[in-house]
Image 1 (tube, rainbow, N blue to C red):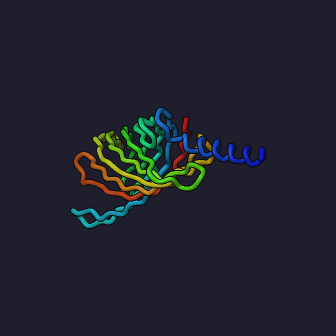
Image 2 (cartoon, rainbow, N blue to C red; image 1 turned 135 degrees about the vertical axis):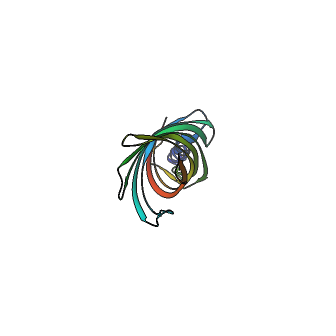
Image 3 (cartoon, rainbow, N blue to C red; image 1 turned 60 degrees about the vertical axis):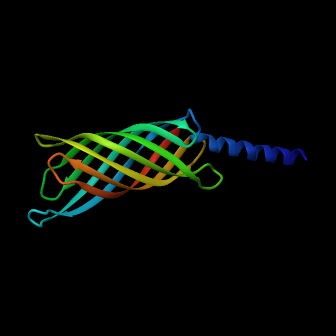
Length: 179
């Protein structure tokens, strides 16, 4: 009887600990690394252009209610394009995130995140304004009560001052610490 009581208590305690990661008042610190490849055709001359984009984005978020966090990311983007010089972009991204579907007993959850972006792009001696928005979804797989790995699929659109709008679909991997 005591053995069963201990086992039941341990299961309840584990369930409580694993669901506490997204409770009101908690913080999430982490970031993501992204990779995308874009092929476009320039309208004015019909040339095909390929770009490789690498993104590093540390972030911090605060849970204002259960499963809903607001925060910000500071992103650095490096773009290498065929036939042109490398481009660097620094962006500030206010974000909102909602965890909406539990995935198993370890507290893992499916989430969606949306953001607005504004920043600056530099290439050589040229600096221009950047703005945009995006959304991503994916599972947050909790390895323990404080650590989650995320795999995301997202869509974003960006407008670069004086250039046409760019749309992209990207996969990413993130690492978050919940405190």
